Length: 308
Image (cartoon, rainbow, N blue to C red; front, side, top):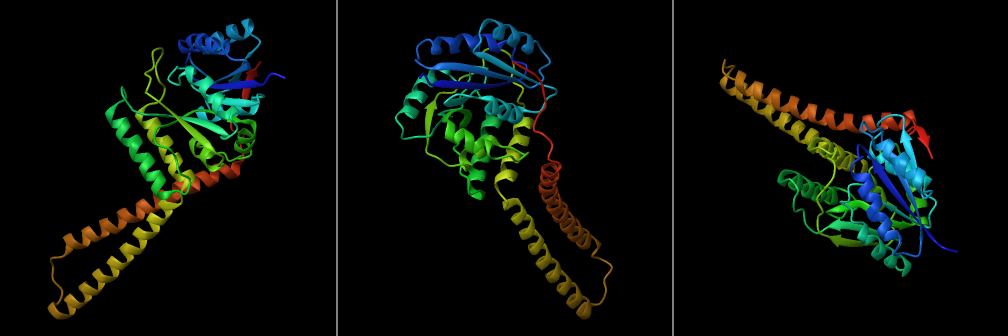
């Protein structure tokens, strides 16, 4: 019986990229002795992505699509596609061709050897990427690996191929706040990382701004580490000690030298310092509480408007 590879492709405003992606994937498909199924998940695009996907599906029964009722984000798109995948092996990749389709045969060969359960990809360089984005991306991985027990590979992409067993393990994690890079690492299994040179987008425009990526990074830190809470506790204890010492100094100074009019500046500095630390701690606690709030609502990760 011929084995099947499921290709999960989250999309948002990718009307220009999808035809080129499909064309390149078909070239790979013709060289491999596996059945293919494409699962495109449209995250409520505002361009003609849905029309393009309907045309592809009408011409190829291997093409399937899922349309969301509104924009739920890439994480929801990946989850929806993974849930629909029926293949023996499942791949997640972007439609912008920054995830090279030419790596798929190599990934398949590695999995078929039976030593590894998952093949991930990582960029060996960040050529063509904005310098500020590269700096903060590298900083994120260093910070995350210092404060979390779940280690993540610097430069790792969402582009990966996994066995059905790995997929079932990932799908068993039902949390609302999802950070897939961390979830893929958290479930364990033996993963091999293929390196490749960075590929720049040729068609369409990315929907990931610097602030989107920063917000996504914060999700990763909060979802896989309680260290920020420990920082808040440390600052709370530190400022408490400082406040005790400052109070002792003020009392002793008053007893020996009497009450002096000067001191408003120092008092103001102390109050601002303590207030700033308190606000910082409250902000950290608020981030975690907001995640708990969303989890307890138990809302669906996405709502499907149409699928085929």
